[in-house]
Image (cartoon, rainbow, N blue to C red; front, side, top):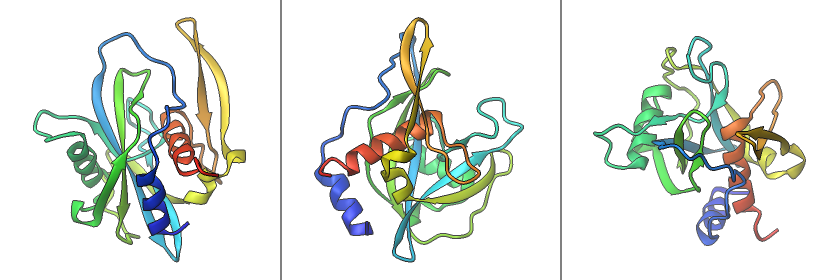
Length: 192
């Protein structure tokens, strides 16, 4: 899939219902992540991070750059852009936002909105080691193939929901990150 095909498919489809159906009853805090898509050697790649192992929340897990909405953020897109710049040094001028997916509610009390963006070819990052241990790329095609989508039913407060997994090489991509990638894959594959 080319960059142009990706943008056309993304913008021409209505957002599907999220694969994540579990809804929490408590008051949730707002957060946003950026799902950066990079075109490199005629292949689309998803930019992911591995969180620092010393963090209190989700240490060592694979995630997208992002974080909670601050009062000074204009909107959730501004949050995603700010957090991406802070965590991996990607300049907002290199980011072309094309839309968003359905929000995802986390067990830690956040409603996270995934912002989808194309980024300029960027192979060097300025990583904030306090938050991020590593930045890596995964071909988008990996997430588009259903055989890489694993779902395990779990129960929380007596309700069943699926935990998503999408392993790639040495990386265990799971939870909210994998569910968001599942939603993106569903959107892009609606006509297939």
